[in-house]
Amino acid sequence: MKIETGLTYSDIETRCKDAAKELAPDFPTTNTVEAWEAFASELEDFDTYAVHEYVKAWDWSIYTHFGWKILHLVGKSKINEAESQWCEYNQGIEVQDLEGGCFDIWSLQSSIAYFVLVSWVEEELQSLIIELQDLAETTLYNLEDF
Image 1 (cartoon, rainbow, N blue to C red):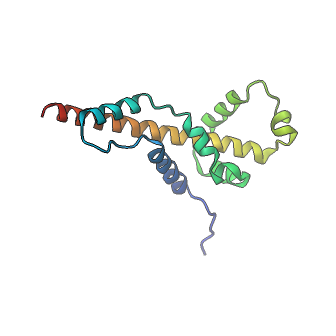
Image 2 (tube, helix red, strand yellow):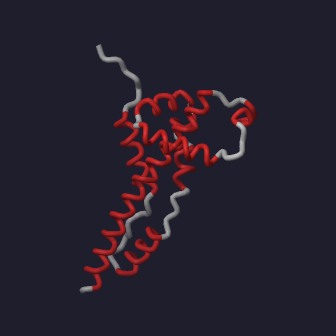
């Protein structure tokens, strides 16, 4: 008998990869030097802060029970990194003062899981941007040769 938990490591990985693809700048619509130069410039100037707002709207970030599930599926290194980010983000704020004094263990898990997701999407996005920069560079090189 299979017990369904509703969330797997693969689900998290897939959603983070899909988010990176969605957040990355769009490919040029024309195959011109100008279009590819603009694309390369957009990749170089890309600000990953958009990831925070994007992940903040996910059901996995909104509903606290997902926090527990996420933290039980990911590796300790991702959790440690997320905890550090959470502490840095909330520096100087007493835990009992967070969320109007309604902060509990579920909120803590959910908050740390949020930073796990943000970090994961940022890593995927940075990797994708490097690949796209290589593609843009190669395409520009080929277009300028003609």
